[in-house]
Amino acid sequence: FMAWIVANSSPLSKGEVRWGFVISSSVQAVIGLWQFFSQVTVANKFLGWAEHPVWQPGTSVIEVAGPALRSLGEGGERWLRAYASFPHPNMFGGWMAVAILVVIYQYSLSKSKGLRSFMSVVLVILSAGLAVSFSRSAWIAAVIGMSAFVIAREAMPTVAISDRGLLRPARNDIFLALLIILLSFCTTILPYHHLLSTRVQATARLEQQSISEREQQYGQAWELIRHQKVHSMQGVAGMGNDTVAVARNHPELPIWNIQPVHNVFVLMAAEIHWTGLLFFLIVLYYILKHILGMPQMGSLKNHWKKILSPQNPFGLSLFVAWIVLLSLDHYLWSLHGGLLLSGVVVGFLLTNQENELKMA
Image 1: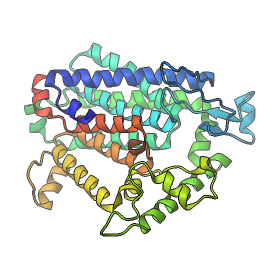
Image 2 (image 1 turned 90 degrees about the vertical axis):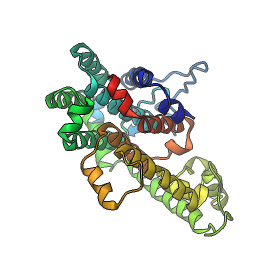
Image 3 (image 1 turned 45 degrees about the vertical axis):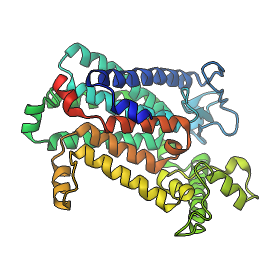
Image 4 (image 1 turned 120 degrees about the vertical axis):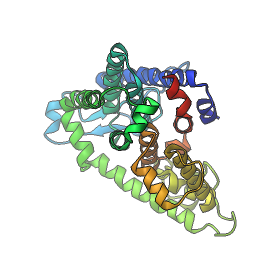
């Protein structure tokens, strides 16, 4: 439903929808920055916020051990990752990654220096929020999405740029936006380089525990898939019942150790059968066809030509970033906020940009 609302809004209101998404994401970024720098979260029943004490087991933290403790100060062994108002920092990071790609697209359409200056400030805030989420999946999605945007933009035919009014700012302006993102990210995170190295190297106790749990989750998901009947729904857990089925199969596991597998494609196969996953893959294929401007079934050669000469760099960058998030986490399928984010992304991807660009 969210995807339908976004995709079917009028060309004039599409910009308003994107700006609403960006501004709300910026507010979340400010909340996340306050949480990280103060190492405090506040519970509020009216706003739906939960408290996440840094000392409490189950809170998403970065645990630093050894010489790094001296530079982190008192209470520096466990550092809270920013949640903003989301149930997990990974979801917060995913929203930041998508919002950054939306701002880059808006930046590419803008002719106003004043508006681009404002968007530069927004990029600083969103990039800093992405940094303090310490979400590796969101970092990867943002980098791959931005790279896809630059590559697709450079591959666009010159006639498409001139005839359709695409990407009016000069190439240097786009790279300036990317430089702003990089500088903001590095400025925010480098003073806490011990936390960064802990997340990147993944050798600390909690990082190793996280990796071990994810490996275990893949094994549990495969166990559910393996017990499904190929030509019937017998043995299928059902949507949202992955953890219920795992708890039933492994009663010896503590309930807090049971989580969905961090891969939406595998999770779909475990919960709604391989036929449900196949249907989702077909939907992804038709979304990709829409992005590449292929309304009719064409040959593989024509598909490859469209990929090498894309008409919609924003859609392509957002699509690949979404696929990365789907492949590295489960919240886009298992949690309400993640489903909303997927709906917004699909709505952006299904937008008819032809009419919108004529009015830009």
